Length: 445
Ligand code: HMG
Image (cartoon, rainbow, N blue to C red; front, side):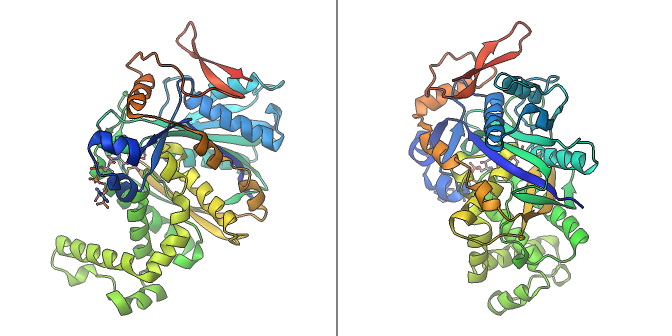
């Protein structure tokens, strides 16, 4: 079976930065530790006045095509995943194709375009769509561009405001990929939930605390379903585990749950049992509450063990390095976690050829998905091309008053007229409205 997977990727961050400890915490009257230690976030990215989900997506895709020497005729599919769409009919992928056609001679008239929606998991589902299209032999030798793009804004003073972010990830999905090969096995955990939704409104209605528990419950189901496909999983099987990262503190909880789950009945459980005992069993407790308390106590003790902390430092922490600086990118979030993990591995000389990543996606509403990816020899050259550190360094650092203005600029219900904070340079920009209410874009040299 020919390998199909991610051949290349590019990341485009919104050009503005809100420093959570220095700028946001004092304005909210909060201890900065709530953000940097509790949530695990240092900063959020925001789009400048001339940026939106289309410009970020088109700019990431343009960089990808340029770097890989691609022409429109090489692309048979453009899939965009977003939960920040501004049109209930015309998909963002058509705008992205329109932007790219301004700078290439050819066009995308024979490419299939669409838009995927299922909260944050839609980016992973779009990867599935592209994978299935190639596997089915319908691609005529062409590759797919999959883009996850979002401006993750919450209403002002919503508890989610600290976890905002904006950016796009563009991935080239092709045969014989240069980065990771996708596996056929997948595990799902899916249920009708109302943890986070946007019923025809821009800003989410969120039950924040419940959303954390729903994430964990669906993730556990997905892990079980995945194990039912591949057999027992051992923590040593996966050198990196990128999770959907709304904020790193969420992944801290998910990693503890996942580790406890996968060590059950293994040599690792026996080894840590010398320090903290074996995992509590339901039949040893009189009530669900008593069992839950025992599990919580065991998990807390587990995360204090040296074995767990070493595993976390190697397998999880590296995947959080980009998210920490940019916030939640919704559909792009798990894909920047993969990129961060691989980037860290390259920078630290880790040998990953042929090794497997366990990728754990989540979308509110709610669904988790777990699958494995095999790292392809040569991945280091591909990942070395990312310039996200430079982009992050160049972001304009907003004052709190400027943050308030930019939140209004991107609020669909306000008409804020604000000067741009940065100057566009060789990129697509928003250029006003057309006669049918469509958005217009142009390329700035
Ligand atoms: P909150 O109530 O403002 O924060 O909102 P908190 O008081 O719970 O504090 C957060 C953490 O910081 C806590 O840690 C505190 O103890 C700690 P925890 O107990 O959870 O481990 N803390 C401190 N630590 C050190 N020093 C201090 C300090 N102060 C406090 N001084 C909440 C938190 C997550 C509810 C909020 O940010 C929110 O509503 N976020 C949006 C929803 C969200 O991100 N949910 C995550 C799961 S759902 C998901 O991932 C899907 C999503 O991406 C959307 C989609 O799929 O489309 C959101």
